[in-house]
View 1 (cartoon, rainbow, N blue to C red):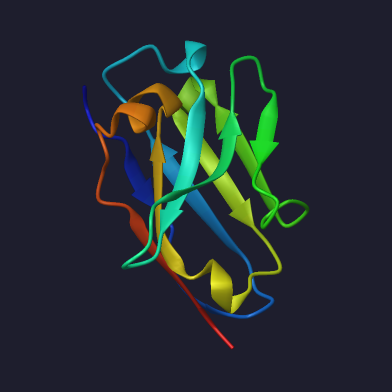
View 2 (view 1 turned 30 degrees about the vertical axis):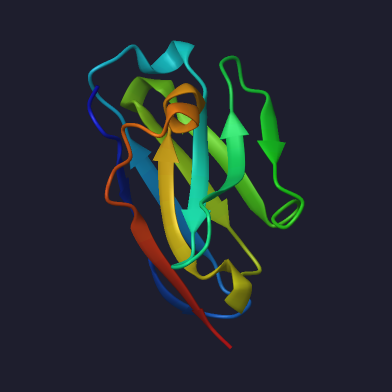
Length: 117
């Protein structure tokens, strides 16, 4: 198992947008689902969105209509487009295969997203 690598985080004002990327390697990317998760210090990591193969998607209620998950199998990369960002979206964002996430393994470093009000 090779941890996935997240990137694209940053500091933006409320109402702004960010696009996160998740680069995978070491396994057959296109046959497995990918999920985006986020964690605020002192709280449990929560599921934000998932995309399966083929491309059916799931979103947490808190991000539905604002975030879009997608994947480019040719690049072994998944994305999370985040629009209309709110201060409560501030967290460290991680990507992982849902099966690994359920077992608590293979977490990467994450990417920090900070939304100022």
